[in-house]
Image (cartoon, rainbow, N blue to C red; front, side, top):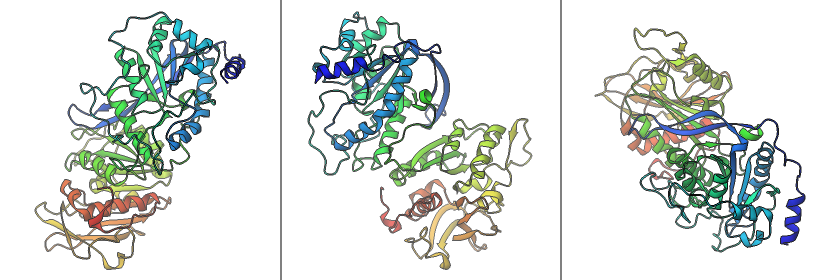
Length: 523
């Protein structure tokens, strides 16, 4: 078997042994940058970066032929063809490919690729090389997922064992590649003067972080490390904390890596087209744009989203400095999002960013408006127009379908109630029939535009009732759910959480979850 494989990889593409004339790789490196020190709000910032492939290595981590987890084996097999295409393209540009299928070196002991790694001159590391780099509490918090059960999402769970013998055959090993499963990878990099490393493979929360040839080790050695985030997976079981989908679990670990260790890129940077996505990952991408200075939605919304939406949505967050009114770093995520929730207050945007918002709306995509979204892009009184920046003062009418006109005094807390004719709507099904007291001050938003359907009304003292939640389908076809509630304390109300969650599902075109407001799932 070993001889046959060695012959096969030796015959494989003498094609690509010569580097192409153009050795440049353009990577869109995504990192997490804290909005302000101690805020806990991190924006995804993308920086286009050019690397010379001849000074770059790709490390393929533990893409085994078989895993003890049936679902992990299946996902590796699904991902491997796209990964091989990346390796072929990078190899042609002159990148060094280092295959690292751990615990399989006996399988490759007679191969020239294995010998190449063994013969690399021993290098002096910046810090001692470790056989396994464990979580570093000085640099990173605990992982955002609980993988204490081994992370297998197969039902029933599989027995843990060594199931692998070699790297999956879909990844072809060229004559000029190298094979190792230890710190020899560092020797290879040093011997060739390689500072840039792209890591891909499985699994982000385990081997991709911890192996002696992987992220923690190489970052500590001073290498420019990048994770190819669509060419990876996670050992995570959705029946464990934080009780989100398997794919959301991977997203959370990728965010952890981007925040604490290194930026990421995608296979599309090398191959063009769209990033790889597993066929079972059907989650629509919901972007939260949060930029207001009164209701602390930069704290309440991320917690709400991960508790209530993590099973069915791919979540992205854009945070704006609540004390500023300018650009929103990372707003370009709207170009790939399927739906957006705005919690924005009186923001003026650079013309190109406002064009991004308008482009999203014009595409007929779903919009969820939370409280201050009713005046998201309306100028403050006496606000001056700045060259190159834009407001959208009629956003409330054009998109949300209301007419915002300030609010009643804060001390007149609003009591909300489902209107009788709306009780059959799935968004409010399960809400109590009696009035619910919220901490939000009641917004004045009438008249509602033609085609708007109110669901919940509120009353502040003896003042006339005002709509608090409504839906519409815009002329461009996009669905809208809007609520003027959203005070920080409102998120302590099961009724409000129920309403917001269901409105988001409806707007996104997903089946609205069933259940009473007092028995919300994922809480």
